[in-house]
Length: 217
Image 1: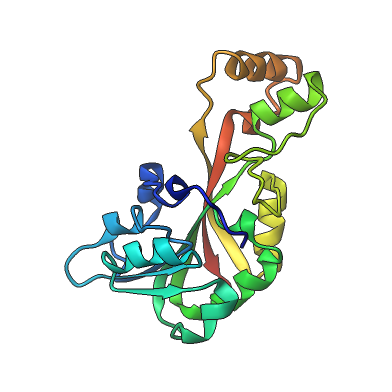
Image 2: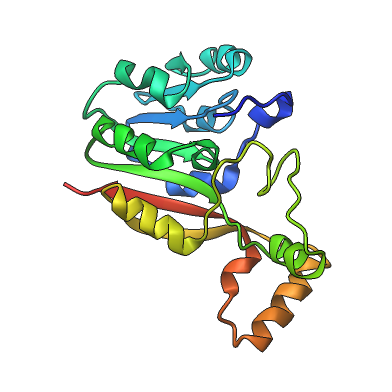
């Protein structure tokens, strides 16, 4: 993953993703946990919450909150993670930062126990703001954060998410749009766009997809 300089980048809480983590999970790990502000919310009695974080400073903060934190990328830490162990592996806005996400998903697969799941948040490149700027501004401008974050290597649609997980040996149980647009510009645009196309483009209302997937046995 590319290094990010803005410290606030590592402090996201993501409360909308909590609903996708089963309350029965006992062993959880968040890949790209940042300062562990999300995974810290999952800590309860008799629950192990681990983290993996490549940013050294963020990993130090996370280590004061979680059961165990490994500093490094997936490739650098994968052999230090136990096999057949975790009930849930979380990747919130991580997959788009990976050069070869398919290979990393395959590496993580054996770390899930039987019945274990992946919980992921992945940006939706077909978000209304992107489509608006592409059509009317004829532009694809990278930014410091958001879907066109300049540290993103990959971009995804709902269709390509399904394909990637299937090719990596996972079955998607849930895929749901999250963080619906509230913009006074992009929301009306998305509505009008859908009226003309018979409401076949509803995915453009959502900034991200939340995905729950189970490894195929």
